[in-house]
Image (cartoon, rainbow, N blue to C red; front, side):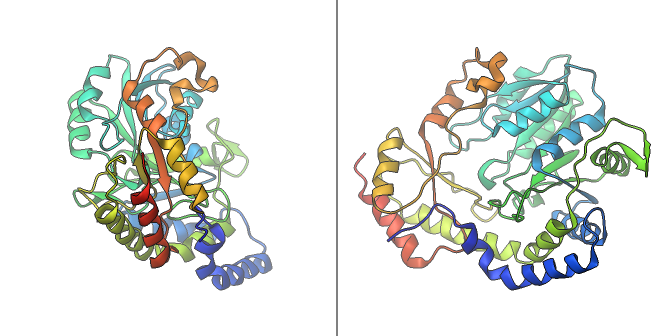
Amino acid sequence: MTIPFLSLQSTNQPYQEKLIKKFSEKLEKGWFILGQELIDFENNFARYCESNYCIGVANGLDALTIILKAYKYPPNSEIIVPANTYIATILAIINANLKPVLVEPKLDTYLIDPNQIEQAITPNTKAIMLTHLYGKCCEMSSIQRVANQYGLQIFEDAAQAHGASYEGIKAGNWGDAAAFSFYPSKNLGALGDGGAITCNNEEFYKAYCQLRNYGSSQKYVFDEVGLNSRLDEIQAAFLTIKLEFLDFENQVRQQIARTYLNQIKNPSIVLPPSNSIDQDVWHLFVLRTSQRDKLRAYLSEAGIGTDVHYPIPPHQQKALSHLNHLKLPITEKIHREVVSIPLNPTLQENEIEYIIDKINSFKG
């Protein structure tokens, strides 16, 4: 049996006819940027996230960068960020001419540790930019208390958390603003790059709209130094089609995760936390083992695809050489040991059983 880690052909197949029909309609109409399809998607996604506004942009990194630029913090102001995150979260801070301050995660959740945030705050700290990693929301109540105490903004990197919630509030509606990615492999994935910002503040909504379009308030009038970062009409139309089925697909993911959590019993493997199965959207199902390379080779031989999210922590990347001196043992341990196994709505019951059997048979 061969089970790829993820097949985008398979995940998009249920929508193929609708996507082709919509593409033909857009091709005939000939309007591809900042049109009605984008407006419709923005309204629908804002409603889905239970936020007031949504602004479609070109990708998740731009969404994060635009959020920070809109606040016009003094250069080199400090933004607290998880040490265990995809590099885009940190690049956005640098791109906005600000300083990332890395905070360790909890080992059991992989998410930023609220207890360590306060220790990282200085007079130069302006905001906390957190990441809802792998489809699980951060401990938002605790983070919100710290932010309120010190007068800090909260920005959510929700690129992996479409539909996730914490204490009944959805990702994208906890902080002052949130960034989403619609990269094709996301729970809500486009057929190319795409991203969005959600917020509840009208003033910043207008600022984000301006910044995504060269800083323009009206055609050929530029009030800010902005970006060319617009979610195009075709991708917006595709996302509208797929958004209708997002909750259903997330429920399928939750059921697969529940099966994995109940049936994987290998003592050499640490499973992800199971305390909020129905609030998490399981963008990834991440195991942890000191025998990662051995496990990956064993599963590959059995025809099971895996991936590593992520093999090198941001502070050890060449691109961030000014952070290479940092010692972050929890983050480093996570990046040495994690491995993601297949979890997506197209997995069949026999494939899930096969994956579980092979993992339980692994000799660490």
